[in-house]
Length: 194
Image 1 (cartoon, rainbow, N blue to C red):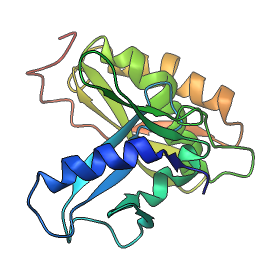
Image 2: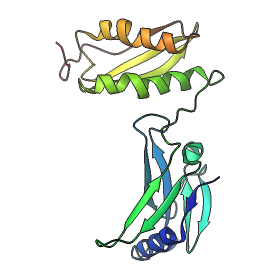
Image 3: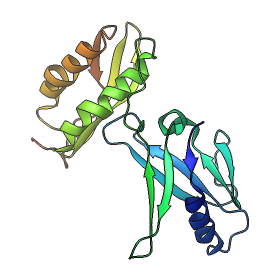
């Protein structure tokens, strides 16, 4: 893995961790919504027992960094640095591959669907306070989706599903044969259109 944590960053992080008064505390590095335009690189405290079995351990000066396995490829060529300035200093994380989609023609169907839901469809639905998620893939490559937020109970959900979501997904993923909604739309409290 080519994630670099500079000596300055290691010194700064070691001081922060020492102030926590927790033996064996480290840091955990991960990316939320990796491979999408909304990816964010995060560093969090990681107390003993909080790391995941799949995390990759990276020994540093006086502490351990735990790299989330699902974020590893998105952290390729990432740099964690610390620079002093007039205000004290700033920790920076540069992860040039965090937003790069890692799906290709040979990616599993569910990975492709989830990528396009997060990268293209949900940002549009978010303006109405809604989102859609993949529940499962049925036989015949039909995506079973569930709406939430402002889309649950929305009077326009069928139009959004067929004219927006299904069309977009089928253009991007030729092997997908259709989508089906399993949302209980009788709950209308947060619906965007009633």
